Length: 121
Image 1 (cartoon, one colour):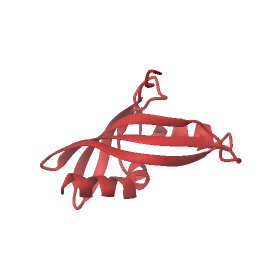
Image 2 (image 1 turned 120 degrees about the vertical axis):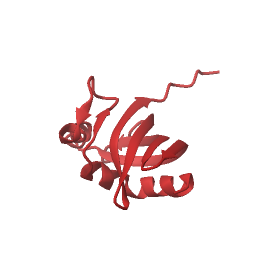
Image 3 (image 1 turned 90 degrees about the horizontal axis):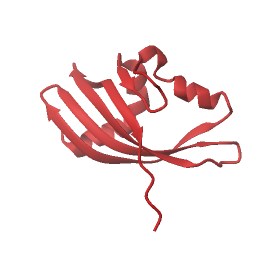
């Protein structure tokens, strides 16, 4: 699978795959790595406030596929918006480890961190 197709598949199935995979990740809002049973706690913390997740963009950074394993790096820009549609934009750097099992690629691990603010000029 070439990187363009892989990223297209990532964009199409990212949320579904996260929910279906056994994984461990060190997500930005967590002080320690979390497993599948807590991977969406940060989402629940926001949706319980009535906020809605809106993606502003998914930008491929790099991919390395070796056999049935892949490391995928990308940036995602998103907002948690209120009922009026207001909310600040955030950009995260994300790295996911993928494993191909059967015909499906599954996320088995990952890490995210905020993109540093650009210095004002």
